[in-house]
Length: 136
Image (cartoon, rainbow, N blue to C red):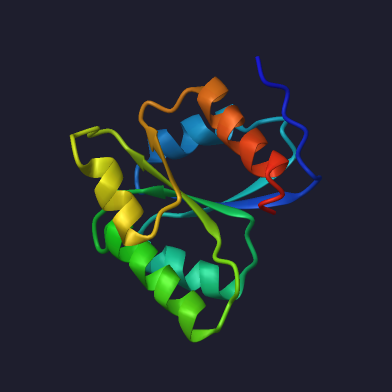
């Protein structure tokens, strides 16, 4: 099992409309020292992203109001408009692992992809990899 040592107070934005999935991810990240901020839809996510500083974003792709693809595109456009040199790392999450989903997510501007149900090991591995790559 991957032991994840996060910098204290690593702040992650979880964009997820489903309360059960929010609870699952909160549970997976318990005791990890991660501060999880939750946006329940894409519009809220863009607003929070513009006002706060996060290390990563977990982006659900299927949401009402604004889906994860459009939300990611808007975040990338905002970064461009603000001349941010390095974009925030966005990990797409979807239950419908259809052929082409991963490509569509990466095309929209996501950096990586996780399939639901999210497994703790896989989640921690992704975060450890990001930490190890000096992505923060």
